[in-house]
Image (cartoon, rainbow, N blue to C red; front, side, top):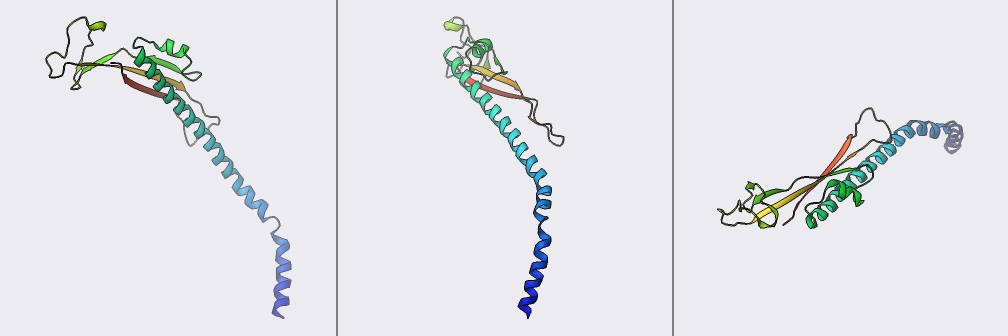
Length: 158
């Protein structure tokens, strides 16, 4: 007797649950779409940032071999991503004890600014920096992506 009652109730309730899946999907679909689009924008941002860092490191390797290289020459080599601007700063020098000094003339001409130190080596550094504008695929009102990305690499040239 109870089994028949359970079977009758099961038949009555099973017909009324047909639209529940559609309602659940209508509630969760916008949230899932926003999550997927946000993940896509963030992925593009991270890819752009990583390629900019890699390009500045590659530019640093070129500057290590050729300390007189310019940002325009690095851009002409095709190292930087499309739309990125590069800059190579003037060399900076330090003594071995990390004291900042004026760089001596190339080729060893002129006085050594580290001559009074226990270690007379002069270390020359070049900074390669890159900048690229970034705009997300979708406009987000509650979260703002950075408008531009920057990366820089400092290399010792001698």
